Length: 160
Image 1 (cartoon, rainbow, N blue to C red):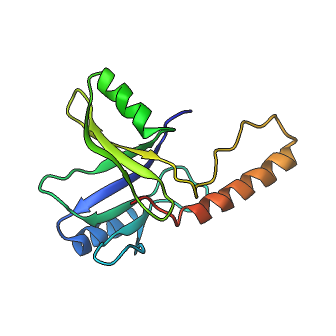
Image 2 (image 1 turned 180 degrees about the vertical axis):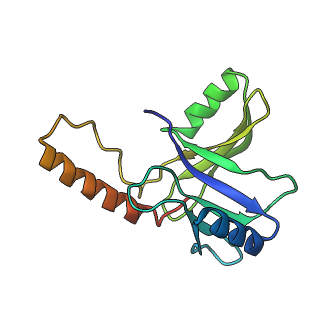
Image 3 (image 1 turned 90 degrees about the vertical axis):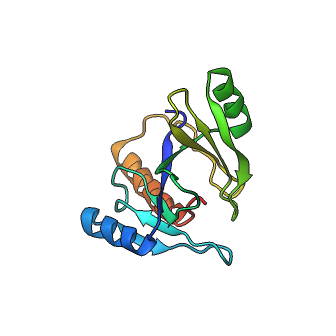
């Protein structure tokens, strides 16, 4: 399916308190993520291996009222921002690079005033695999294991 939700971010006034809450409440693993000097960010793992769900991040709140944010991956932020505006949405954060080859982000408000993020893959991100023809069960199982392993490795490269 096109344009999946791929990442979330939890802003916090007290990151240590929020980290403790989410780890104890939901059993999530939250670890510091390497960032440039002066920036603080934590990767949030909500699942193990190929379990369903998405992972995200946590960071200090950057502005009063900053909400929990979901990010939708799109092929082109520039094209999607034009489509958003044509359909009554408002771009509130212009396209910006997020570094380390992870691509770009942008944010918009829908006509109901909900804030939503966009993510465009960077050059270092693996390309989307083309649809495959039906394979024998054993081959398909091996491919699924390989894809899950690749996804776990890529999971270390979180957005923002």
